[in-house]
Image 1 (tube, rainbow, N blue to C red):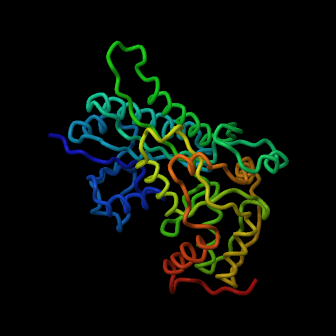
Image 2: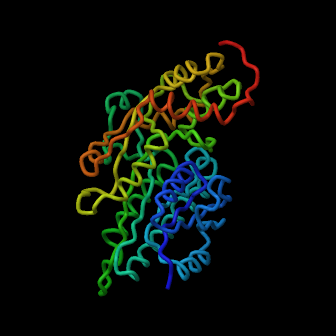
Image 3: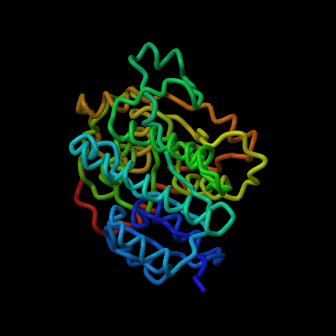
Length: 345
């Protein structure tokens, strides 16, 4: 008899790192984790880990022969900035990889006679506002507004949301057999900030990079302008949202894709929060126009009223608590005794 498992792809990434710890602590299902990289030391032993490429079909064929997949948290992706340098690779990983997992989940749902839960993290990158005037006018966007992404990553995420809708509502619609479809649910994340992992190339990573540099006593040149404003979220809230939506009764949900928000800050406001904790921090602004333009096309905030109404979404971390209780103390511990000498600003 196959063992029932929860599958997490991209488990070594920022969201995956926090999610594995939370699910392992709950102890409800055996965890199968998949990533191109080995798991960090603090995650080892919490799951059965496979260091594999999600595009490797023979691997998935072997996996479903041994395990019954009950839930999938599909986190593996090539992030926004990196995706712009290798758009074809990004499309293969972000779209083909997701398509492969959706088809696997659909087939598993049919075999089991009940839906596989498929949790998918989308991104603020699916939005694309054409200019600063429009961004200021539409300060809080709803899920269906301004879906004109300017990056390959945003295009990939938006298309995968549509694929999730297709596999949930229309897959095998011409088949004469009764089809049990998967249960696709998606959260659209704002910029995520983690205290326990190093930034890995996201366009919103300047927030984390400021703190990591300051804690090490290193100067930091921010790659966006001081006044650029986008929404952010602390990693504990990001994991809470994913698990809260996963646990919501299907009948209470009227959507498949939900905005979630927490707080919005300008790059200058982030600099000020960091400098309060690190008075000697050297933070300047040297915009990289290509990266800045990507972030500038994202809204200043998102309307997450559907998530709040339908499944009780409520962030625990506002801006002040995120920086003073979560980010700064934990990143300080990471570099304790390792900081270089600094001088006052």
